[in-house]
Amino acid sequence: MAHADHCIVDLTRRHLPAMTTMRRRTQADHHLLMPDVFKKTVDKAVIRADLLGYLPSWWPLQTRTSFARGCFEDEVLAGYVLYRQGDRDNSGMFTTRKIVLINDIAVDPARRGRGIARALIRDVAARTGGNDGEAELNATIWEGNAASHRAFAAEGFLPRNRTVSLPSKTREPDGT
Image: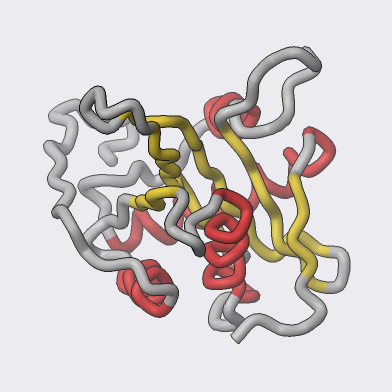
């Protein structure tokens, strides 16, 4: 269960260095579990570019569909969640349903097992209407990521589909 001193807030560009470091660490962990899916290392610039897509834009009139929320312990970023939300027309029945896709959850390896991922999942559900059925929440979890499967299951998510992937036939210069 999440500690009472967790503080979950919207992340901004000032959090980008900590987010980038955390993404690199979690990417390395994923590579150990699933080397055919995740590269050994990812270029810092590529990570930053991806993360920037979830942070507030400098353009105040831009409609946001991508969001980043961070969980802090003792004023240190302990984990973050990246998600996108939009609307889906229900087959022309004049109703629109909000759909939310949780794209990534990362937790500092030194802070795992403290309920941070679950707190972030609950936060997204509360902010987007998932708790009251106004939004459909989805997440894609790699088969080998048992901790993520447990966290989502504990928050009431049910398996619906299996994700399959075709690993790239090209290799990085270092052979990975």
